[in-house]
Length: 133
Image (cartoon, rainbow, N blue to C red; front, side):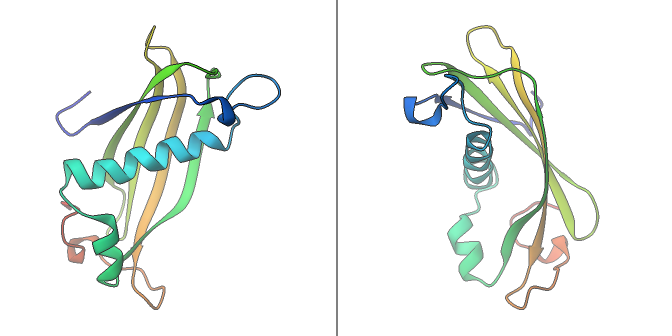
């Protein structure tokens, strides 16, 4: 992890698993989103709800997930997040999910985001207070 990295620890809950006994593929996006929201709050000091109330909507515009191995009920895992600017109006989160016991890579993700105003128009990131671009 770099100085700009962020990491949280979570546990798989039984209800997140499918009939195969592994975490359902859609659940991973919840893990990744939770880590992004905490990253914005804890690392950048920006309250997601306050940003939204100010008329700035931070939205996901593309998600790339590479599923490497499945998590199972009872697994403890780490979700990491790093943020980078992609263009004047887009940024992305580079994220991983690692099983804690052996640091095995379970998911590698790249989540592309943008800031839009209340009319749905893209905003220049330099005008979005707190993102650090």
